[in-house]
Image (cartoon, rainbow, N blue to C red):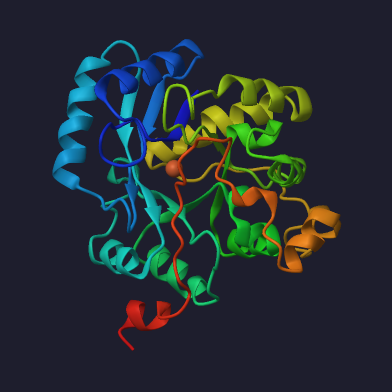
Amino acid sequence: MIDIHQHLIYGVDDGSPDLESSLQMAQVAASEGVTRIVCTPHASDPFPYNAPLVEERFAELRERLEGVVELSLGCDFHLSADNIMEACAHPLRYSIDGKGYLLVEFPSFVIPPAMAEALFRLQSAGYRLIVTHPERYPAVLRQPELIGEWMRAGCLIQVTAGSLYGRFGKVEEMLANELLERNWIHFLATDAHHPLRRPPHLQQAYKYVAKRAGEETARRLCVTNPQAAVEGAAWPEQPEPKGLWENEPLRFSRTPEMKRARRGSVPKGDSPGPAGEEAETERVPARGFWSRLFGR
Ligand SMILES: [Fe+2]
């Protein structure tokens, strides 16, 4: 398996706090059958991307983990106006090993309609966009049709492994499972931040998917699609995403949880995870997005 989203590089964001934790995380992943980890430090307002430090620690970890697990370097790229301009100015810099596949995280609470234009700009700069864990954004829980819009715009979808079996809450579990049923998931990844509090478990999700959707699907989400992403290869053919082009509303849209969320109460999924975990998404104000992005 290949884990394309893990905060393995220590001391650069809210991920691994130290070298020992990083080595431990890598060992756990390897023991579960992960052969390559894509290190994805945040590039966000609270955690700006410090390229020299990231590269230094990435090289150190690669050396220390030789023979245990292979490493690639990517980024958990937050879609702020400044980041989008920076990524367009330096094509492919933040993508996985510079080969084109880029993990993007939307503002968690408010997703401005102008974001569609931003996605198009990044795609035009050569990036293949992978939307990270949409099932965990409060904004998506209120407006799940956004996922279909992003997919129709050419984005790929990465769901957090633990969401499938309820680690991030019931609402997220429901949505993740419906995405699985519909073939709307392209990658499973751990988004691990810590060996204990946010551990790098991928095997449980693999088994879960193999049981619910078949071994072939589990391999596609944990092995072959991630392989294409780390190689920067052409995107492999996928099974038909059910209801996508027909714009068929998600069953999730009719649930009481969803209706409550639409009425304005923040859904349970607002929490980034089980108690004690750090928030990994920042509140990005909607106001001013366009003016910051395009200077008007
Ligand atoms: Fe992340």
